[in-house]
Image (cartoon, rainbow, N blue to C red; front, side):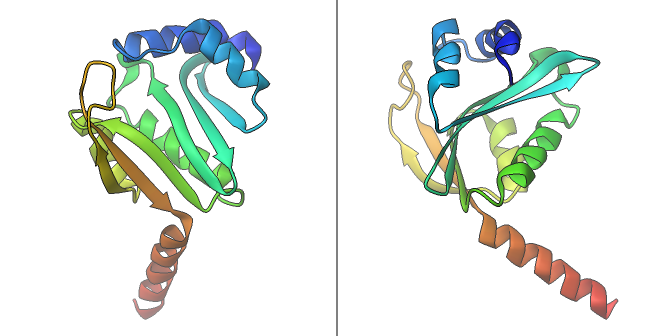
Length: 155
C-alpha cells in the first residue's frame, strides 16, 4: 500500500464496515507507525482489497482487512490472505485478528486457513456485538505441510 492508495482503501473500508469504519486520518496515520505493515490487492491497476497489520515482536495482528464488496465470493479474500501470510511467515510466528461473531463467511474463511478461535470478546464493537479473537500459528502451518509431504511419500 502506498499513500496514493488511501482514497481507494478508505472507500473499501467505509463500504465494508458500517459501524466501525476507519477514518481517512486513521488510515493516513498507519504510514507513520513503524510497526504497521500495509498491503493492497490490485486488479488491472485498481485497488480491490487492502490489509493493515501491526507486526510487533513476532505477532502479526490483522487490524483491518477487506475486499471490495462488489467482488466478494470469488476467492479473492483467500488468495489475499494466503499471499500476506506467505509474505510475513518469516517475520511473524503468530497471526491474530478480531472478527464479528456474526460474520460467518469471514469466520469460515479464517478457519479454512488454519485460524482457530482463542476467545470471545464481549461487546467489542461499538454497536455492542461480540468479537471472536482468532489465531494462526505458523508452526501449525509447517506441521500440516510436513504431514502432507509425508502422506505424499506413501502414495
